[in-house]
Amino acid sequence: MSSGQLYDTIGTTYAATRRTEPRIAAQVWSALGDARTVLNVGAGTGSYEPPDREVTAVEPSAVMRAQRPAGAAPCVAATAEGLPFEDQSFDAAMAFATVHHWRDPLAGLREMQRVARRVVVFTHDDPDAGWLRSFWLCRDYLPEVACLLVGRPSMAAQAAAIGARVEPVPIPWDCADGFFEAYWRQPEAYLDEGVRRGVSVWARVGPQAEQRAVRSLRDDLASGRWAERNRDLLALEEADLGLRLLIA
Ligand SMILES: C[S@@+](CC[C@H](N)C(=O)[O-])C[C@H]1O[C@@H](n2cnc3c(N)ncnc32)[C@H](O)[C@@H]1O
Image 1 (cartoon, protein in one colour):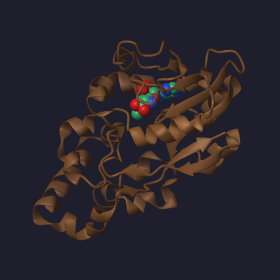
Image 2 (image 1 turned 90 degrees about the vertical axis):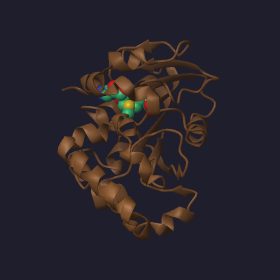
Image 3 (image 1 turned 180 degrees about the horizontal axis):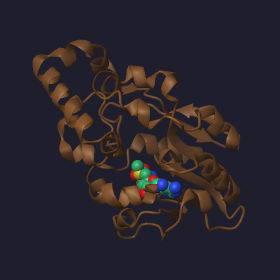
Image 4 (image 1 turned 90 degrees about the horizontal axis):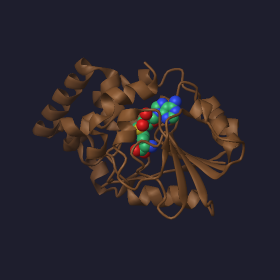
């Protein structure tokens, strides 16, 4: 199944839990510099499209395109690996939480650089960089996440493909966007089926792993074991769980 097709299947309730996190948006928009025209690749519902620039979106899934709000930027049905635009036709190209879905991430990143002078990509660091061990959800409940990442190009390879520098993106404890790592300090959120349906990881690990993880987390929350193991987190306002911006 192509990634566009994946989101045609799992994306129907995306807009219910996935929305702009203003502090992360500010970091992305600052990285766009003075770009006036911006291409948003893998745009989904457009959560991180800057409101004060001329945006064009690219999104392969019809289900996702249909959830773009009224008045959102025009959206083209295409994929990152074959952007239907002339060389250097945008000031900047951005991609948010989408590269891990691309069939060929390096080809997609190079395409972004072909069509734009600046490239800004929100993605995550390599699994062996430590976040997989430090994020309790993967470490204690859903180790299957590691398997989903096998074969992906490393952060170094992605950065090298476009000559990017790498900037950490801290996740605020009360993150408004319900991506996978968002609820690191609000563990009860993962018990909510609606929250899980807005994140592809849960569909990709399959129902057995999902149900086992949720059952086990529910038990640990009830017994106080989660709080005991993770009490240090409760004092943190933000966490580094491997989310990164590539800026070229
Ligand atoms: C997790 S969603 C992120 C959507 C949006 N950027 C956001 O931040 O809410 C991933 C998106 O990547 C899109 N996608 C998957 N494969 C793609 C590809 N090869 N090229 C471009 N977009 C792709 C999916 O259809 C989906 O809309």
